[in-house]
Length: 84
Image (cartoon, rainbow, N blue to C red; front, side, top):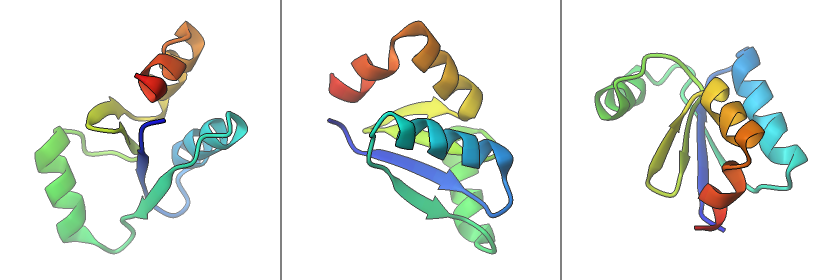
């Protein structure tokens, strides 16, 4: 299974939903909390073009946020991304 990273911040309901979805599936993930780390957040924005969290990566593949993660799950494509 590919490594999963979730970039998040405190008090973020979409971050909580993404982490819950992954946990419920039994997917191990690394959480990188960006709270108070403006330089790290700016670097991530430069990399992805996305200004919100969560930002989720499966290996080198940038999923997007919770909405995109949920869409992958609903379409049956999340398992394919995790195991390809």
